[in-house]
Length: 340
Image (cartoon, rainbow, N blue to C red; front, side, top):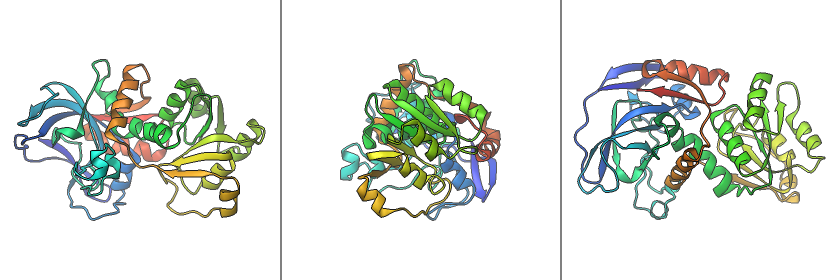
């Protein structure tokens, strides 16, 4: 079968790999139809793996497809049914997994497409517990945005930041895949949304999504604008995933007792901060990584209810590298997908 494999830094090749064996007990084989691109893919493409990996490595960390075959003992799924796949090989046995918190697995085997062979191939076999049925009204391309993009935002906003209806939130990089999802999810519960973008074209698109206030961070200091717009009170929540470039400005945007939730560090991995400001203002800072399987189900339910992802571009599998280049250029607004 065809697979897109990484042979070295920035060396992606469309190759032929052996067909899979039939699924074993408790397993499901899925025909992959769509793969979502994320910064995780970009980090792997650049050679930024934080653990040893065996090359060549099949890429792709987020995907959806159709059930091709069922192993013995699998219930609740049928051949031809559309499904989304969880993006990490969790153990299913530790306390975190038993409680449905797979993103805190104590014995995780690795992230698909980063540490382990991923989804950019025609077929993949997974434990049935890592496969989530897709509602009939949700397209397979939209569903491919659920395991990381929507799931990550669902986990950040509602499990960690505890965002409540009517609160205010600053969403950084409002044109990104998770930024667009965060704007839509926050507006859906009646929040006032502030967002940062890198150009006025993205600003207009973010406003069309529902953002109440848009700040072009290339022409204005976002922290100054947010404080001005909130009459120096600040926002309840900051949705952070940029890192050092925005970190301290993000803290200045918080009201006393405000919550900052972060899932990324695209501008670097280290920063400094004012500890006196932290404890005097009683900020609550939460790290967030990935999502639970329940978050994927919640995301798919939201899609079925009409809260769909913003799709920037769809490429064929052979143009996966072109999709990564577009993501790296930061010209993207929404999600980039690859179809098989």
